Image (cartoon, rainbow, N blue to C red):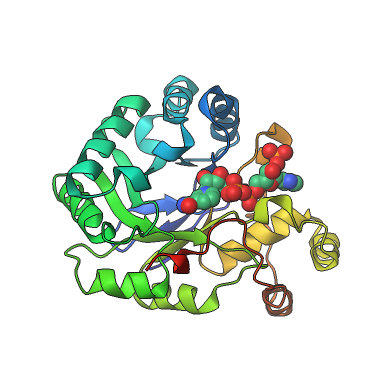
Length: 279
Ligand SMILES: NC(=O)c1ccc[n+]([C@@H]2O[C@H](COP(=O)([O-])OP(=O)(O)OC[C@H]3O[C@@H](n4cnc5c(N)ncnc54)[C@H](OP(=O)(O)O)[C@@H]3O)[C@@H](O)[C@H]2O)c1
């Protein structure tokens, strides 16, 4: 896995294990349901973002698709991820869910399609459907989300197409170092979701200190930490100022000491379900 290091949100990219490149910074859209997603996606594309994260569960694929179409940015320049929800899982269910997502998005293809959660008894069949979609050329890359090391090991023993991505919760407050290293050793890109821990810890004094040192905000320090760890990051914001702010992270560099101190913020702060609860 290598980096194509440009200096903005569209050109600073990671290369997936199948050669497809993904902008390291994307816009998250969870909780921006229905029309709420339209303005942030338009704002993000205007600010230079070229990576949008959605899911059938977020109930905003129509608005995301419309924002993409009306942005004037060529479809092929944008990396769009969606995910198959838990109740849609299974081989046939996932194939149908994919078609429904494309219909709502009004797109011909997805850049990345993920198994949203490692649903017990269904995840391998679901992933087989994603392999079929990939081999049929319907999606440029496939992967998983919320897969812990144990789930990945099971998948590696069964898959035909190695997952390109594991999208998991990751922030300095939930630094899953072993999982990150496991993924990186196997060429799986980690995408950090809830990188800002949903704003719960942005007041941390170390973030303020490093923000002053680099002339940036606490959110920017965290997002830069993600990139320098070799992870993509998909912060969500509904505010244009935050969307722009979050994209101004390509002209600073945290030094080794900054990174080590940020690593130590790990406290296990989780904003969503622990994937280990899935047998
Ligand atoms: N695969 C999965 O299971 C999964 C689970 C959760 C999330 N995700 C994905 O990851 C994305 C991001 O995670 P998330 O939405 O849970 O949370 P997040 O990105 O960690 O945090 C979002 C919160 O941070 C605030 N914020 C954003 N930029 C800020 C800034 N510069 N300064 C201060 N506050 C800022 C936002 O408020 P404002 O709107 O006011 O800016 C919002 O309240 C999701 O939207 C979704 O696409 C995936």
